[in-house]
Image (cartoon, rainbow, N blue to C red; front, side, top):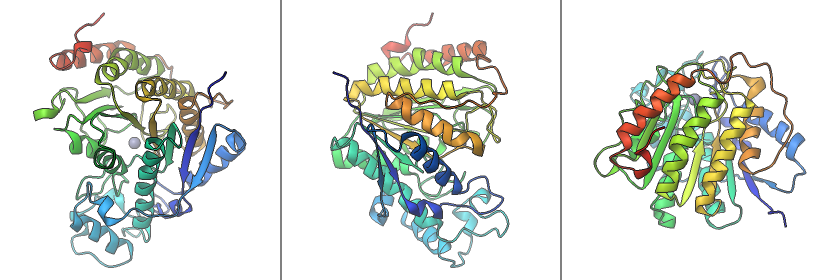
Length: 369
Ligand SMILES: [Zn+2]
């Protein structure tokens, strides 16, 4: 009998509020475009269920990571109240580029994102579905009292801490495949062995963190794995990294849940980064994460929101979701601008370096072919 897989997709109409305004790379129309393609391709597919949520995260939930001061400042700024020293709390890229104001209502959108990541976790933990996807999730740059990189509240950190507290999880694998390093997430779990944080990102771009030698500290030493990739790194390189580093580490760690996040910005045609994945590469990532999730009863969360090339974004998101769920669909690949096997030699050197750094902490990192 063929196994029946069910994936829940969390969505909210309130996501329209998560919008930095005209001229900003992060607009909320991305969510509308995705929903349209989703309905067209998967609307009647029995493996998928779309759940719309209207509930917002509470202050208590946000406080799993953010400070009270920061939450109050975001709430006030988003309702139009002038905050003295607003830039003490947020970076210049977290405001409307024209008015230079913190967008009205965005804080509500940010709470929606957090709530949906928590609900996605509940769905998976309570076995309502094996996989749960939060469209809008993965806001990995938000620090405890500082918002940056288009991220207001860090739903990844909050979901992982919620998983520890509510479900007593002690081994959470967080995989960041966004093109940018997940500085907020990294900071939260840098000394915490309850999270194995693996981060693939383009090196030398914003936020400038995520060096290979940064492997955690204290009890968390060896539990942060940074894979800073050269511009142009493509499908084959990502695949080798999964086979040489990510899968062996996951097998040794035996996670109780897998949280993957990141959208379309590592695609070759993305407009603000220079990595080289094609749709096939994203499908491969989804398949590998699906394989890893077998270590923990097929449970995984997928948080998706990034991407800065509108005509490719929805296709990438859908490729990630369907391959994670073991479902095949036809999506047309726009002409890739770089060859997908580029930077393989550089990647192999990086793998060697990463294994060297990690081998005191992991049996599976002791060998290199
Ligand atoms: Zn990104």
